[in-house]
Image (cartoon, rainbow, N blue to C red; front, side):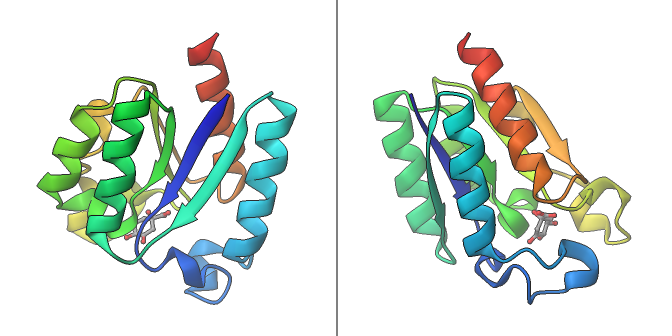
Length: 144
Ligand code: DQA
């Protein structure tokens, strides 16, 4: 069963980007981990990252057409993109929201709101890369 693992802006620099917050695992390593975790759950993960909001919207639209489950770390777009809210609203397969850090515990007020959460079956936050494994387990559970 295919699952899309979609990542938003600045996550391509994972490992080098504010490692005190996001850790030292690189995006390439995270992608490899996700593929392995998915395999073990009998899922096939297609792991992607973009800095271009329209590209993420195109991927979500395709996921809606194909009824593909999605694990989504929309990074900063999480907090303010109504286009992202609308794209998530139309999904038909399970959507799981994931964040490496715990946005609700961070000092910036803008991180305390998510446009993704209303459409997600679950939010996994604050577990670092491991959170993606937990999110894939949620997808597995939801698909039965
Ligand atoms: C993030 C949290 C967001 O607030 C932030 O803008 C990110 C990463 C996380 O994975 O912890 O870019 O989604």
